[in-house]
Image (cartoon, rainbow, N blue to C red; front, side):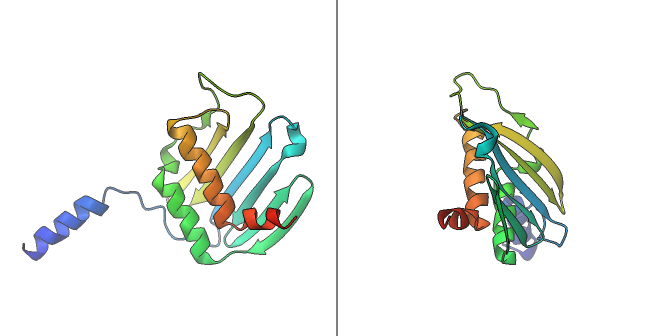
Length: 150
């Protein structure tokens, strides 16, 4: 193989995948989970601006500084499900389970921004991908560890 052939082959493998960019001071990732059986009292979430995370669980709020590598990993998780190209609303499904919360994720990245709302009572396909994304954001942001100490 010549150098150009190798470069073309590498580009075919990696050039089609989106690049959401590296974290910046203005990178914003916000995940808010609300509703469900306990209603508004069940609210929890994490808002990341740059590397500063603000955790909220019911009425308790705390801030923490994240490592840039953790914010980068969250951006990669958004890339994996092509978040910037998802629809705004995934709250309706055929066999929904009632009384589960809804989640709203907003991401403002170098590559663009999007807000997606989804209902945790819906299962399969994109609903499962979004639920897995929620968990990754909670885990990588340190929220899961923080709430576990409460």
